[in-house]
Length: 116
Image 1 (spheres, rainbow, N blue to C red):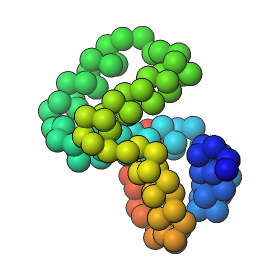
Image 2 (cartoon, rainbow, N blue to C red):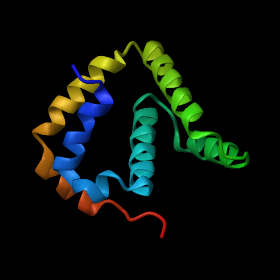
Image 3 (cartoon, rainbow, N blue to C red):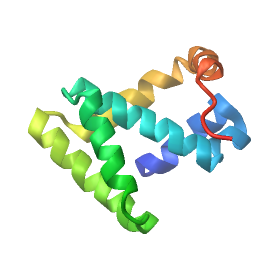
């Protein structure tokens, strides 16, 4: 079986097309949105988020590959703390969204356009 990351790409292309699928700014915003939704679902408050935003942006940017590794390690640790299987959750979500392409496209069209 292909790695998960490679199996996400065909869905991205089918759902959004190549331009949106490869738009780095759009992918940043959607990742941030999903990570905030996960933190919220796990009990994090908006006040805590704002404090962490201020903390993170008071420091210089990190190196992308190292930060991806950090995200993966901390996601695994979060899942362990909450009794979640991150691999099973990812596989279930990828299977679920293949049946929701039209609804996801419609929802995407309503998302706020962030930045400029």
